[in-house]
Image (cartoon, rainbow, N blue to C red; front, side):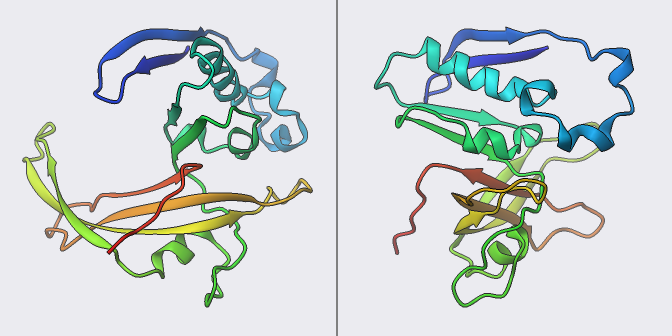
Length: 193
């Protein structure tokens, strides 16, 4: 089941905009190696495109809409999909995508390129207790870059202009796995001193 939930900027839930329920046919199990040859409409990841269309259909024209997805939504077709000028995408990156090298950089992969940019700031993040892990404060740094993401290697076409925002824990306590997120968005990102 894939659910699209509408929430206001102040985190007030408005309700469910779409619920897509499906079951993968048994004969499709173990076919991962053939997935690149299939059109997006025949893949499980099509649920993200359906969700995007349903969200836009439920929201009035002209209303700003930010579609947020987890790592599973890091699908090139989601960013490339036609959408209103008032609709933007924000996802947690899963793939270290091929990019056009940034200015003054030889890096051809997104994480390397963004990681080589200057740190723009730091913030503290309260990490709640979970199971036997104690609550703590994580010290995070932030970097970002405008990136030109290349089409997947098995397809032809133009690159997409996106923004990558990387936040990573610094001064990680011994024995603790540090936090790290790289977000990809169609929203313009700017830094002002």
